[in-house]
Structure formats: C-alpha cells, structure tokens
Image 1 (cartoon, one colour):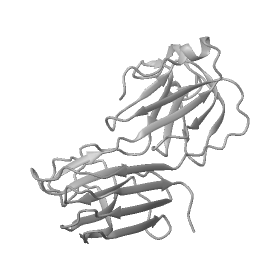
Image 2 (cartoon, rainbow, N blue to C red):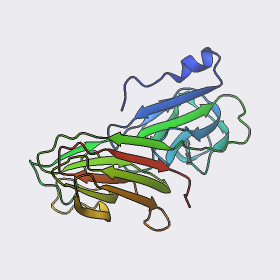
Image 3 (tube, one colour):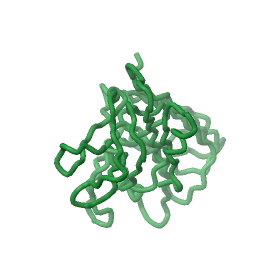
Image 4 (spheres, helix red, strand yellow):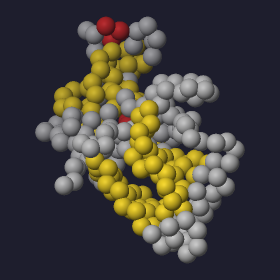
Length: 260
C-alpha cells in the first residue's frame, strides 16, 4: 500500500467534484477507505486492477455493510454512504467507504521453472485507480487506457522473469528483438492466473499457461506475438523471460479492445 493514502475530506472541502484513489499495490491485502459519501463510483482510466470491491454503510443491511463492485464494464451510480460515527459489526470499524481489489495479486509468485538463486524476477506493480464522484455523474462508462511497457537492457545471471499486470485485458502486442550481434537470447511468454496459495509450498496453486515456450532468438532476429482473449485466454499477469544481458528491446502493449 502506498502511504499516506489521499484524504478524501480534503477533496470535498476543496470543492472538487470527485475523489481519485490511484496507487500501486504492494501486497494482496491492500485496503483503502474514503471518509465521505458519494454519488457514484467507477474504475479510473489507469487501473491495472479490473474488478474492485466497494463496501459502504447501510443501517438496514446485515452487519450494517453493503457491497458493490466496479469494473471496466460496470460502474455504480447512486448514493454510497460513509458513516464515520456508525460502526460495522462485529468488527466495530468506522462505517467508512472501503475500497479493495477483488482480483488477486501475489508479489511472492515465482514461475514453476524459476531456479534460485541464479534466476531473478521483477514485478510491474499493478495500479489501483478508482474515482468516487460527489455530484451526480450521470451515465458512467468506465474505460481503461492502453498501457505500454518497454525494456531493453537486462542484468541476467540465469533467467530474468518480468511480470506485467494484465487483469481483464483482451489483447497484447509483443515485439522482441535481439540486438546482440553474437549471442542468441532465449525469450518466452507465460500467462498466469494467481491463486490463494502458500508460496513456500512445493506445489503452489498458481495456474500457468505457456503462450510462447522459451526458445532462442538469434542475433539480430525479431519475434512478434499477438495475444488475444479469444484464442489464448484471460490472465492476471503475463510473464516474459530472457536469459541474456542484451541489448534486446522488448515492447509490450496491453489493451481492453480486441484487435482484428
């Protein structure tokens, strides 16, 4: 969790029409809160997380807590109450608007092919982006922007794994070129769906789908891969592997829009 989180009250006293919570995740249990009521909730344009849970105070609901969820295809228009003097039961937590990812995230994930201590792994932390509206937003159609990631030079002793968030995306364009004029570079792509699992277990439950089996890319050669939900499936993350220090430009573009 990024600390301190934005103070929603400062947005209302400052005359803003909305409160935006935009932060990278650091753990699978990150939870955020808004101290003020609102008239709508939607996914923000830069959210990597696709499904976000929202809890709000409802005096007639069991435990005084009601739930909704927002996603790229669903927003919520209507009053969402925070009640800072009320308490959720039985925990007796203040009745603020609570916001947390429904999608799973595991920064302790390691690919099944990972070999310690020679292999390395790096994560692009998924961004949670949610907008709470203080005035009537009318009809809301959440839309996430396309995101692009670029890598070029790597520090590799064994195999380097790069984990990129992909929650709910429908399309990914991958372009990899080995600019080493002498040595090949082994390049692979795997789709991962996280599970609730003990990462220290010899048999963690994360699901891995091989999209491009690791294979040598010769000096000066280029590999282009297009990943679509219809043909390949949908994943929480994509994992890219290389085993040479480079240079080897890697361009990755993810999108919610299906491409041709």
